Image (cartoon, rainbow, N blue to C red; front, side):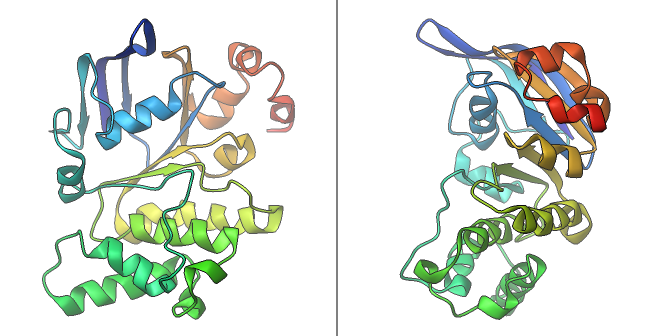
Length: 242
């Protein structure tokens, strides 16, 4: 569970997050909002890259506000980025292994097993030795997700994991995301502009607008709210069919 209490972030005269309080309890939670709504800022607060001027954030009852980013890894917080962090000169296995090296395991064998299992989970077991430079856009995004499910995570944060994917590739991505809570027991926090992806995988969705909570609830109901549709200036035309 993500518990956000009276959270505010300020950059000069701008408040991308303004007094946000919300509890997110479902296995897969979506976050959407128009450009400038505060989505990336909130993700950066959860990751420890941005320090709020007010408020607190807890994950599964443990306060993470004030905890250094690397220490949040030990607490079970994992994150992918919009721009993948795949090294072109390393193999897929080596890329995931590099992430595993920053996570505590009982033994080297346990670490190796976890890497193999994570890569297999995202469907790339046949690409273990392929260099990063030879991986497709889909494979690079899936490799990033493999990193996030290592080492018994509590919270997996995904930042636009479907960017640049085709419709068929996105279908596979949906299956992977839906399976994360069962595979490793983590809650998933998905930030994406692809409302179809959000609708397909998220149990509940929150909407930010100018740093404030606009809506929160079951995904289908949220996507059909008139105020949400207005905030997106008609981007939710597909919601009629939900």
